[in-house]
Amino acid sequence: MNSEIHVAFVGNPNCGKTTLFNDYTGAKLKVANWPGVTVEKKDGRLKGKPDVVIQDLPGIYSLSPYTLEEVVTRNYLVAEKPDTIINIVDASNLERNLYLTTQLLELGIPVVIALNMMDIVRKRGDKIDVSKLQDQLRCPVVETSAISGDGLQQLINQACELAQLGKASQPQIVFSQRLEKTLAQVGDLLETAGVLKRPELKRWLAVKLFERDEKLLAELHLSDTVRQRLEKMTAECEAELDDDSESIITNERYDAIAKLVKSCVKKRKSGLSPRFFGKKY
Image (cartoon, rainbow, N blue to C red):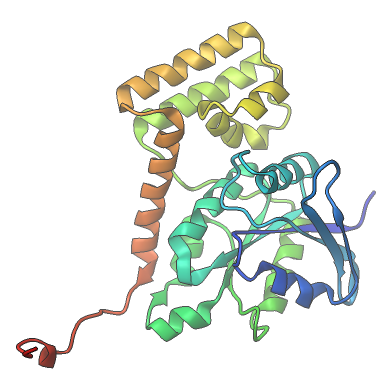
């Protein structure tokens, strides 16, 4: 039995991910390329705890297979299935960063969110209700600072604890009733067809197949009959919602995130000084 704990660092480019990784691993890291591609592969062991292996995955904005970085990250998360994902989020750009977060939560892997760059949020005078954000996403959220080191011990402890519990995160983003109906049908089709080898991936697979993810379609080796039924379900939903499937998912995901951010973030009221008005130029 492998006693090592494998933790994957995932986040958007420039979210502070590499700074955190270097702080945790120090000089004890390996740098190479992922097999067959020029994308850098970087992994190391946690200082003081060599049984914790940290994989720093390429910075990405989504799990769509459009760039080498996205393909590498997605392949690792789905095929290697790390014990925990630490999702580093730029707290000063929460809405854009949560787009990836909501996809990671669909993978059936425990997720801990590192709410990084909180110093910028505070300087702006904004406030994030971390407790509410955690409750709504149903996964731990830890405030961190890659620069000062604040929250780093709590973050890695939380990740290791979740890894040992082995309890997968559950997706909390709920789409429109019509879209949810179709995704449920797609998931049931996968079960009936006998291609759902890992039940925890049901939601993620349903979303990606609805989006007509060609890479995934090829990997699953679906029969012509199953493909035709899948296409029929997708086309019917597209007709009712009057958009293509990928745009439907993207728009509804952002709509749900916008509501989440609105409920958890309080922006400092900005306005011009009363003296500004009436000033003559």
